Image (cartoon, rainbow, N blue to C red; front, side):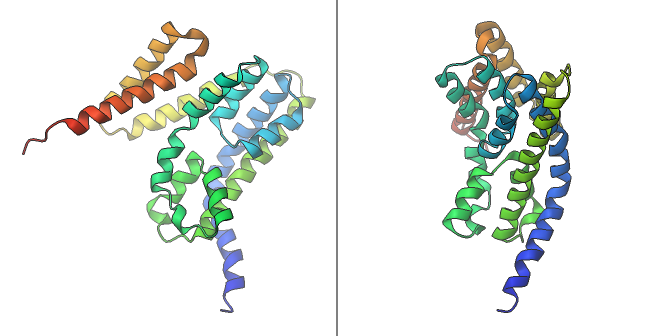
Amino acid sequence: MHLTPAVKPSEARAAFGDSLGVGLGFVPLGLAYGALVTQSGLPWWWAGLAAALIFGGSFEFLLIGLVTATAPLASVALSAFMVNVRHVFYGLSFPLHRVPGRLGRAYSTFAMCDEAYALATGEQARAWSGRRILWLQLFLHLYWAGSATAGALLGSLVPGVDGLDFALTALFAVLALEALRDVRGDLPTPVLALLSALTARFLCPGELLPAAFALFTTALLARHLTTRRKPSHA
């Protein structure tokens, strides 16, 4: 009963330590994102606002191009859905049931980024309380929004820097390499991804990313249904 006030700061400190490695990785990417926002002709505050309210990582990079190209709202919505639909599946195993309160669960659902999911579902996180998970997500959110804002402010002061628009490509390249290291013999998945990208490149060059995601998602669902229906041989 006396221990309740002491638990909160210790959980916050523990969550800060949990978030530190990933959070420091957010900083250079957030700085690049913020600088890219201003050098794409958008106001500096747009970076911090998007980072705080969308918190979509790779989709935020994609959104810069969509906004500057004045893409139709339907294309923006489809792109957002295809890039972030994986979070629906994250929710199946994320320990949301441990997070206290409706408001806490609502924020935890909103802030369920790839990195928070990886940390909160790992072996070492099984004993974490819901408050510690919330603190972890809040720290990651602050790292991203803070570094994006700082990058936008710096980008508005620094002349144009070539290559910042490659940050999204570099991000997906790193994520692809990490995924390839973890496939453990499941070669069809990267092969399906490559075929989806090539098909989208030839069929829909103007909407390559949404088309590739749609094809890849369809291929994965088809493979799942085919595998599930296969009779098992004892």
